[in-house]
Length: 328
Image (cartoon, rainbow, N blue to C red; front, side):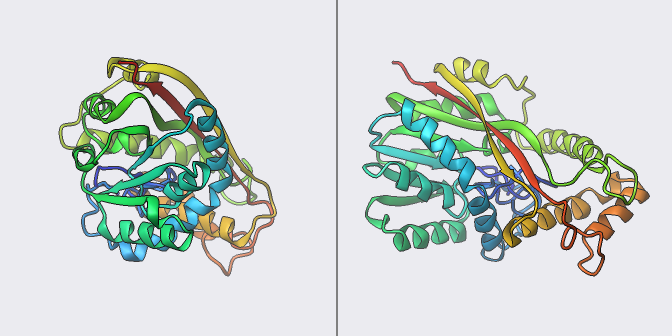
């Protein structure tokens, strides 16, 4: 979503960042197996160089598809800022779900999906062909930001969704992203937002407030993940200020909500179960025995109190997107 550090956010997260968009390896969206969360799309390798992306791909795709209503809101917002883009680059694309949404939203644009995982990019190419975008869809395999040098043209819109935080020197990476924008081009950076919520504060088992405690543990994990990245540089996460430092003109910030109320569809319920499973597996040592036991019940399909069966499970998640324009 991976720790390839190139872009995704997905499975090194221990939890829930992924949405399938780039997160392949981090379990953070949204995603791979570690990250979840953040999308997911991307190319990171940190500890996930042994991840079998061909196995992970269906999960990443289903997560990104679940978040399609949110991404469609993002596309509409970006469409009002970016008129007639010739080339859109998805930096940390994962299996290409969002890349293809860009192709659909901007029917005159060419789309380039960039990721470090060849198997995921193969899925992206197949998806683009199935949807009728093959003639204006290309892929680039490699780590971010260096892989952007393989692009034949500068980007009119460069989309980086939860991929930047997998790169050690985020300031340098933003400067590299900016260099690959065409004059007047826009960088759209998805970073931040709000952790996902799936359950009421008091779920009737265990100590109330489970998800808030999981958030705190995952935040500590995220800090450690960042510190362990090659070339890691600590930065205040003032994204508009960092975009300005990269020589761009900040153009706007907006948050987008995925609101899937109970009762959930089966894909949404599977997303919740997958997110909590990754947290249980990735953060077990940091949880109390009581919270581990609560998660075990929530994840046991035979337990009436599990997320597989209970009627009060929902998905509420916010992603924040920051845009900036190259003015020179």
